[in-house]
Image (cartoon, rainbow, N blue to C red):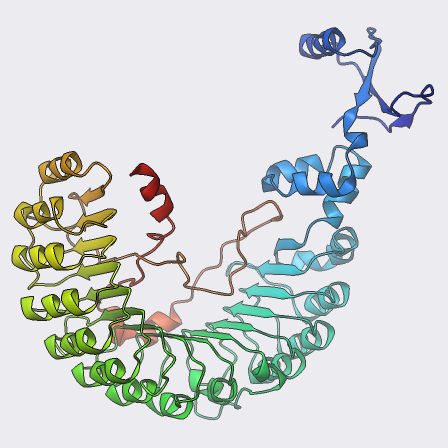
Length: 542
């Protein structure tokens, strides 16, 4: 920064051709010290005067590809500052930026041509607008789609001025899209159908709080479209009429992941339609849905199912989970939040213990298992590596001691809000030989002394005790192989070196009002987050 235009000086034969850069001296002591230091360690002479100084620009010998690679390791602010060093750095930075995040306010429209004339290699674009601002409209989205025809990922957040017309233009101009995510937008079924009809390579679709779809029973069906042959993942969250996506879900024969979160309406009929024996579904998340044992029984027909999360579905009972355990023999991860309704209990757990021998991860929240059912799981599920028990009134010292003595393969354990004391925790000083981490939270009878004692007995064991948690806090168990996967279409690293500007998007209160049935209870997350990511570091301590 502060450099004048560089000039290439002739070099003698056999010498390295270097670029000479002239700077205007600021008469500061710091600059003089830098120049004297360079003069003392370099072979080439450096001329210094009160008026101006010159030095060799070593970066001129770095190839553009290497310089671009260096930029990839810089943060957003550093990278933006580096782009101001010289015209060459500005050009290299622009050509190597593939991910861009912009504040999608209406003021963005006049400068869109200049932004994408500079960043002409963008393939991943995120447009965000907060709820207090006016977002870009169809004209802005059309102009962006014309400038970025090679987009493979796009995320729209809070772009409420975009209608079906803008979405149709985006779908027509950006046919190579592979991932599409939208939240708090106002376009409707026509815009979504245009996207599915034109983007034949679409693999991941995430739709959250889409308010343009009518909720009066007259919504236009969505899908399947040309994208049905390539779709691998669908996430629907907080939709008034999510059942309109039924043709798309049932028509996507290669669908691997389906996540239905907090959507209104009855979902049993849709699950009966899509859940067939030859379906490729591997992962299903059902959270705060109107789904009953009928839907779970239909879902059990998916013989390839490996991951199942059923959270806060008050109409589900033992019957549905028995069917799942009986037919889904490949089940590896099972998360159940019974919401303390006592409709899911020992019968379901005994069936899981009997038929789910391949189980690696089990999360039980708001369920009251007995010693018999826990012992059956510990004995029969020999591959169980991650276990979380939260908000259970029946899991005490005897049940925890049973887990310690029977779960030989267990590596991660989370106990939260259970009547466990120091005596039960002490059992892990000798039990579970493969245990690398234990987390105990909001268990009133557990003291800090047992944590220190357990660390002294098993030095390699990571013991995490949270004894100061607020009693009214909701139960939270976090454990997963791949980290938090709540939104699979989120662009990774939105605060990384490619980010230009970010804006927070708020959530409206309409949906909370319409979900008054569920609003009386605090939301409980069910994934055991980033435990396996920390597994390497835990093993390193051992």
